[in-house]
Amino acid sequence: MFYIYFLIIGALDWPMYGHDLRHTQFQYGKGAMTSTPTIKWSYLADDYVEPCGPPLVDIDGDNKLEIFIGTNGGNIYAFKDNGALIWSRASGGSVWSTPAVADINKDGAFEVIFGGSDDNKVYALDGNTGTPLWSYLTGGSVQCAPSIADINNDDTSEILIGSCDHKFYAFKNDGSILWSYAAGGQIRLSCVAVEDINSDNSPEIMFGCEDNKLYALNAAGNLIWSFSTSGEVWFSPTVADIDSNGSFEIMVGSFDNNLYVLNSAGALLWSYATGNQVWASPAVADVEKDGKLALAFGSSDYNLYLLKHNNSLLWSFLSNNLIHRSPSIADLDGDDKLEFLAPSGGGTLYCVNDDGTLCWSILLCTVDVHTPSIGDIDNDGCLEVVVGTAISSYLYVLDDALGAVGCAAGIKENLVPQKQDTNFKIIKDKIYLSVPNNPALSVVDGLKVELTIYDLSGRLQNTLYQGTLSKGNYTFTPNIHKNGIYFVRLTAGNITETKKLILIK
Image (cartoon, rainbow, N blue to C red; front, side, top):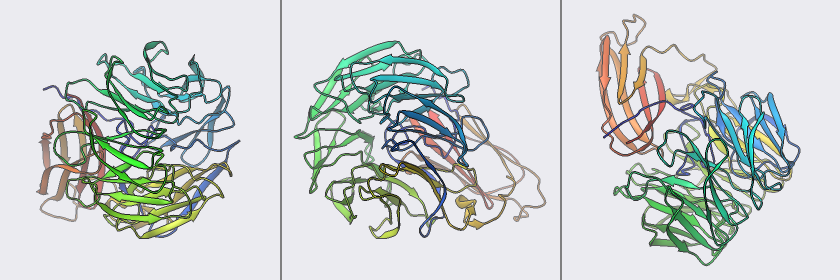
């Protein structure tokens, strides 16, 4: 078994559609939004903001997250965490495609990839300046968000994206085509999910199509299976091991009013019928802290649904309009329970508690709030919400009203985060922790430490250590055997630090 552990971008970023290649829509960390949040800042764009959640990435190394959006006016914008415009770049037509941000050519700098919905192109821009790097003309509108992954194990990134010309494309990082696959209809807003669902040490590629099907391809672009629904599949599948049995499930909504859950071979496990179309991807997280994942999704019947892994309904929440964008999940109020952000077609963003009751809501426009992204954009230790709107054409950043900091270690209002008392590093397959001789430590005989590892859905994987450590250097080896992205959380005294890591087998 070969392990590579390395930090990517930041622990509380949101670099692509759905947060990650599985589209969990889940963010680790905590916020302090116990009541209706304040608008930290807003920006009036030239037209409505793309529908599927802006990427949040630290591209300049200042430990704060930059924000990237596309608009129906045909522009891509990059903002600092405080709302200052870094650059904007015009494309040849409206941009429905949520950008993805990554270092695709391993040169230490980030690129921005997106589709042009009217000019039929896929674009790559320099992330720092917005300078065009390359573009590719497809045969139809490119509305879906790109995914970026190394699908052929050549240590370089490929760009994966569909088009309304009925083709799904895999591009090399220089913009040349690796392969394309002809589907049976237009590929609208379905960003591809990427995961090794059949344990063959090669990732599979899954996307929905207007021909009513969900497709699964191998890394060479060959069809493994397809699953037919009775309605169009506009949005993206979500991939997760929801029942914690060691095998992945694939979840997707359809215009036939159903949410479908399939096994890794593409066979139906179960479906759940709602009162109207299910457009967008479900979000998944360990809501009940039982090691199983719950599924949150909206319907055009105005409801947000939360299902257990076995198809039983936990609750439904009735909004003021259709919910045809994906919800996002995080502990937004710092109560150690998860909240659900549900964007509605009526212009209201709802924050729903884990029991289905309303935590808070905020009216942002008259028509269509889009999928929110969640991250610690200003590095204050607390989560913010970033969300775009349609008719009013605003980008909003929402924060708690009291200016909390250090939420992961308990909410502290208007305090400067304390200096870290430990040196916490991840190198290859080891986690290194150094406890200094610090007379300011509150525990005289040592430092109370907890070191834990969580997966993308917030499910606990390992407790590496829980106890008191005296001065010295310590090494820990994670006991994890499955590829993926994980969070390593260190709580040392009253300081909490989280690092993101990737495990490659």
